[in-house]
Amino acid sequence: MSSTPQHSQHISISDLRSDLKGEVIGPEDAAYNEARQVFFKGVDRRPAAVARVAGAVDVARVVTLARESGLELAVRSGGHSRAGYGTSDGGIVIDLSGMRGLDIAADAKTAWVETGITAGEYTSAVGERGRATGLGDTGSVGIGGITLAGGIGFLVRKYGLTIDDLLAAEVVTANGEIVQASEESEPDLFWAVRGGGGNFGVATRLQLRLHEISEIVGGLLILPATPEVITGFIEAAEAAPEELSTIANVMLAPPMPFIPEEAYGKPVLLALLADIGAVDQAERVLAPFRALGRPYADMVRPMRYPEIYEGEGPPVPFMAGTNFFADALAPADAGTILEQLHQSTAMMKAVQLRVLGGALARVPSDTTAFGHRDRRLFVNIAAMYTDPAEAATHDAWVAGVADSLGKDDAGGYVGFLGEEHGETVRAAYPGRTWDRLRNLKRRYDPDNLFRLNHNIPPADPSDGA
Ligand SMILES: Cc1cc2nc3c(=O)[nH]c(=O)nc-3n(C[C@H](O)[C@H](O)[C@H](O)COP(=O)(O)OP(=O)(O)OC[C@H]3O[C@@H](n4cnc5c(N)ncnc54)[C@H](O)[C@@H]3O)c2cc1C
Image (cartoon, helix red, strand yellow):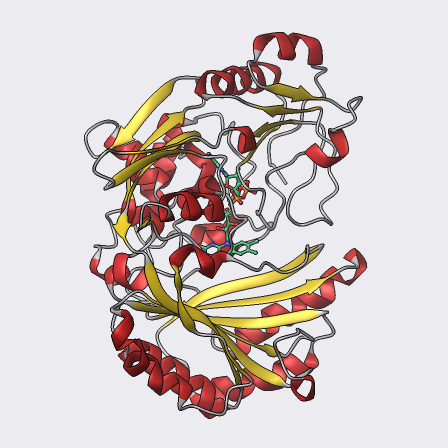
């Protein structure tokens, strides 16, 4: 996983305990088995210690310990990294889950939030004040990981990525310093953390913009999937007002209580829609989607915005995946998706399509380290499975689907990458973004302490990069 050799240093759990305000869990502790786990339950790693830090000062101490001891350092917010970067074999884990503080400004236009909170908890809490910040589609994802990756969610067309609402971040850098990064203070670091993942330090607090959003019209619409329905859905999503963002999963219908039995195993387009425009206009906005076919289920209804995060699937042991950006989906591609779904033996597989554009596309591509602003469509291919011996089969399937859909070399979104290195990570940061990131990595983390991530190696001074 890391290119730097692992030192097998012994750490004293009791010394660490006396150094930190937060809790330290070692292999001898009853809580260890739970504490070493992440979202993907197949990831089975045994860290030397899990430090449930209580604040930035604790984080700085653990960062310093990792730097001085040479122990591998994992940083975990919500633990949803597909590669399992939130845990480590033999290393030390900074587990931010004890840091869930939220401080909404008096005018309710911004909030400071600690990075151990989940997307769902944050959305519920700010939702109490009729406010929201765009995150992803899943409540249990950590605000730390999703924000640093970029954040593509239900508000993407109206308000852009999560990083477009990030106003400042408190970051513990590799030398153990606690710094504020914003347009005014450490602007280069602020640029890098907006898309550069955990490469530049541990974000302990984020200041996010809040939008006035309370009642929306949203929920699940499940349609029988044909090539015409899939392409029609994309056209309708592109033509819709920016208040509407959609996430369409083309998949074989799972046996879920709200899906009629006769549809089980048949191709469906399972879409999540969120329309934050005027509720009394929603019927008109949603009509083109409903007209695409006779829905198997139509659960789109007025709701409070946080309700869109309710209802999460069962735990996932392993997931093969790949993703890319595209500009369009031809009817033949939609047909290919449907054919390919039948070829996979994974317990669940889906090709997810998200129409972008809108506010995301209006931000110049060099404003942040997320460099894919000009692409219209995001395609994420995933296959879930339980037996690790099948990894190669499912990896090959997702790669095959991506190839047949014309995935180019223009790179994907790091948020959905797995244990990828080298060219795949490099391609995720197109154009000059990569060189700028490497130079900043050299400035902020020259020894690559933060390497358990989609790693950006520090620029080599001899490259002149
Ligand atoms: C079920 C599921 C649904 C998803 N849906 C979406 C979606 O709709 N939109 C989207 O954009 N993404 C989505 N993602 C991707 C998700 O945003 C990334 O996997 C994200 O990195 C997870 O964040 P986390 O904090 O939960 O994970 P973690 O495993 O804790 O962290 C992921 C990475 O970020 C680093 N990191 C986390 N917190 C910090 C921090 N505070 N400081 C420094 N580094 C940190 C970690 O070291 C690690 O490398 C989804 C993922 C899953 C599994």
